[in-house]
Length: 398
View 1 (tube, one colour):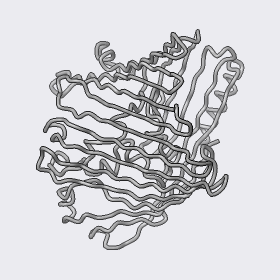
View 2: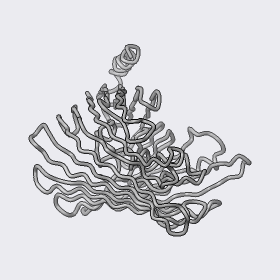
View 3: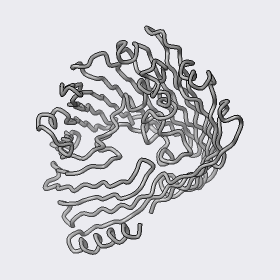
View 4: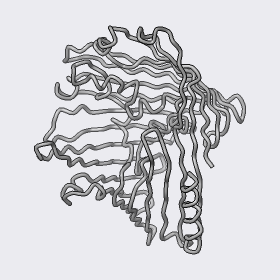
């Protein structure tokens, strides 16, 4: 870590003459599960504890005094491994910007308050159930490993980002073209993946972005040019339609639609999503989101319907303390298959001490059951168990 700090400091010193604005910051998230267990026979009532660093990052960014050139760098360590990300950009005119590199958080994402923003910075800690329904982990994905064995989980079926575009999260050549104030065209070409140019363009992302007085409308095409083991190209692009409506005072509304286009692989379900944030008063508000996958054939999801639902009321005790109560449900409704229905849920109240976007202390209670059919529990002697934990966390950025 000392070497990383020294490198960033040297970057700031060396580039100081060329860049008029330079900022260096960091981010730390540490989570402790003070108590955790489940009701399974395997645990036999024993109570455990654990801790981990959810995030250790240093970041630096800068631009020249004319705003024509700039760059961004992230170095750190997270549960998935080491992090090294960065990009450089050039903006010769206001209507055009060229970027090389990327941001793993996603560029050009269209989710409004329905994706990561549902729990905001608490999403990245172990206190809230935030990431599960966004990325398809845990509640919707824990049983996915049993899918091929016919032990039906919901991991392959539904997550928030089935209906909302998460953004380009890799490295590539990025183009932003804005011929008018209300209209823009965003392009991402994954050249860093290498290979034939036809495959690069086959996997491009193109987004048409319209910003009007009442809100934002975006149409995003995400290409997919992969190869199977026998070197046969399998191409199925996906289209996301997004509408973010902000015409009603104190209300933000998100509508999403995700459709996989017909290609060499057919029978994909469509996904629809709806999210909302309502500030009822200065001290009370709530968020809600629902996503469902519909249709599809037996090779994809047996034509079954799956959905997830989250509700998050929040109460400000004072300027520095807020209580959140997260309730969620995930379910599969068999229609054409002989699979059992599966249902998962979570109940997750937590306390936030600190600012909404700045440093904070978090403490909560998590109770959840994964969204799996009864067949999923066969390897666990048919024991449909409930998980619980009492986590605390520090989320500090500077």
